[in-house]
Length: 109
Image (cartoon, rainbow, N blue to C red; front, top):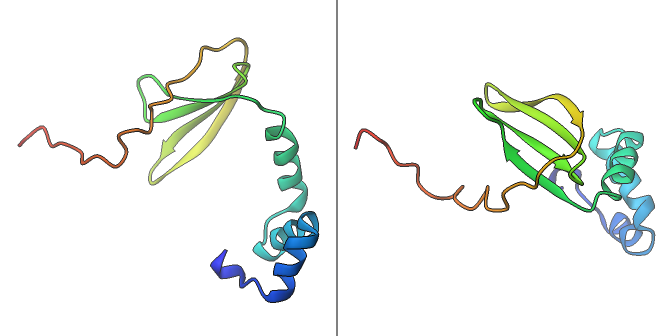
């Protein structure tokens, strides 16, 4: 947001017309508004999100409402989308991110 340089006029628009302001900020950031609108329409209806690590690989699965799964795998220094699945899914582990700030132990020590 710092790169977008929000001036006083845009701040006023954010206060009184937030929908219009979000469209303007989306355009200013170079993002497609129709894509953002579709994402909001989809995720605004989701009541539950679970995250599960993949088995035997460096990736994770996002499960939406225990019915739709989105697969991501590690591609060098980032994750890439790998597809989706539908069906009945178990819940995830809400503690999956609890130890992210913990130092990683070196087994050679």
